[in-house]
Image: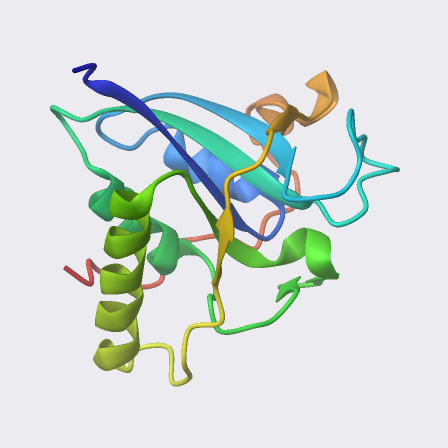
Length: 163
C-alpha cells in the first residue's frame, strides 16, 4: 500500500490555500486546480461549476486525511456559501471532493467535530462532492503567492486544532 495519497479540497481562492498547505508537515506537493464543474479543460475565464481547488499530495506516514481536513477548517470560513472574503460565487465554495467511503466517513467526522466546537458560530456549509477530474490551473496561478508575495489572500490560520 502506497504511503503517498492525494486529497482534493476547495475553500475559496486557491492561491491562499495552496500557500498555507505547501509547508504543512507531510505535504509533498500542491497544485491549484479547477474541480467539480461541467466543462473539460477549464480556464480561469471559463470554468462553469468548477471550484478553485487544490490537489494536496501527502505522505500518510507523516500526516493523514483527517489532519489535512482539520487544517482546512482552520484556514478558511467553512460556514459561508459560495464565498470567501471578497470572492463571491460557486468558484469559491467550500468543498471536499470525496474519493472513497473512508474519506467520506472521515470528512463527516471532522465536520461534526468542527460544528460541535462552536468556534465558527455557525454550522459548516462545506459540501461533500464526488471526486471528478481535477484540471490544473494555468501556470500563472501555480505557486502564485511565492511568485507574488504581496498578492491577495483571505486565508490564514484562525484557530488551533479541532482534533
